[in-house]
Image (cartoon, rainbow, N blue to C red; front, side, top):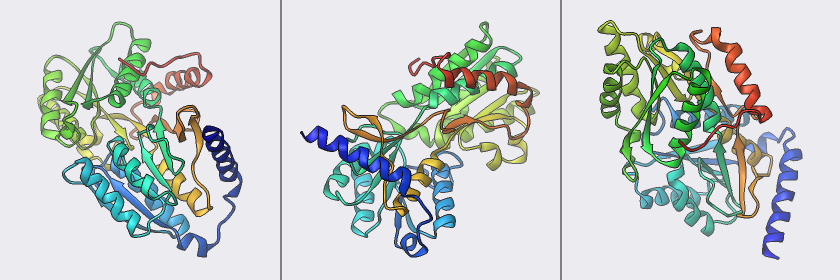
Amino acid sequence: MKKVFRLVAVIAAAAIAATAFVAPSATAASKVKVGLAYDIGGRGDKSFNDSAAAGLDAAKKKFGVTAKEVTVTTGSDSEREDKLRLLAKAGYNPIIAVGFLYGGPIKAVASDYPNVQFGIIDDASVDLLNVASLVFAEEQGSYLAGVAAALGSKSGKIGYIGGVRTPLLQKFEAGFVAGVKATKKSATVDAKYVTEFPDFSGFNDPAKLKVIAKGMIDKGVDVIYSAAGGSGAGNFAAALDAGKAGKKVWTIGVDSDQYLSATAAEKKNMLTSMIKRVDRAVYDVIATSVAGSSVNDVIDAKAGIYGRQYNLALDGVGVSYSGGYITKFKAAIDKAAAGIKSGKIKVPTKP
């Protein structure tokens, strides 16, 4: 009976979400106080956290909501829980946590604040009606990046560097390798990680990632895709050094369109970025909250997981054409995207 009640409640919430967002009044919007909890690196990381910040900024501009932003520094579960409780006690609603590492902490806090709507990026483990799981088909966007990498590489040697070896980052790897191989069978992909689980410093260690990238470049790799948060800066730096030594190395950014925040020198090497619309997910949570509802698509009804999955069909992932370097590959990329959307191309989620 409890399962039935939960499903009925969510279906009703989803129906409201689909119809309720009709020009909410300025007064209603002004009463919404948004709490945004970043992971290590926070606003200014030019990647994952900044994409979330862009969604908040867009919502503030559109609706005039007020907001408080917090960032973890030590990265412990207790610190994450403390940040979320701080926001909940202060009356912020909705509260959005940026990153799967908030999974345990957000379940603990959301259980104590059932009337507060929470959202969590990159996690689908919390079976509470007031927690929206905001997940992405990273493998699909990475597949398209792999197509671009295969077509942009001259050596046929390509690299992938993940921040931490976790199932989430391995989705990026799996999709990327599949895209490369489907485009150029003879190409090889060297996949490495900055740190191994449970050491999450790999998301904020550009110096270490640079060493890994340099090792790949020394072996002839000429395109490197890094999915490592703030550590990705090390990839761009390694490509710059290679250029000074007479080697052309393309880089592929991640999460946001990193070409837009790159230096003039870095832009010359940035083939593309795999865009993951964290900004859209954050905006959606705020917009539905302003409308008096929540993001509650069914993700796994049996497990009681609700929220939204952002895939190619929802324009939740994709690749950037900034710089114009992959414009000549657009037909091939579009063909791959169409194949994924139709189901003709099955993109793996595990290496």
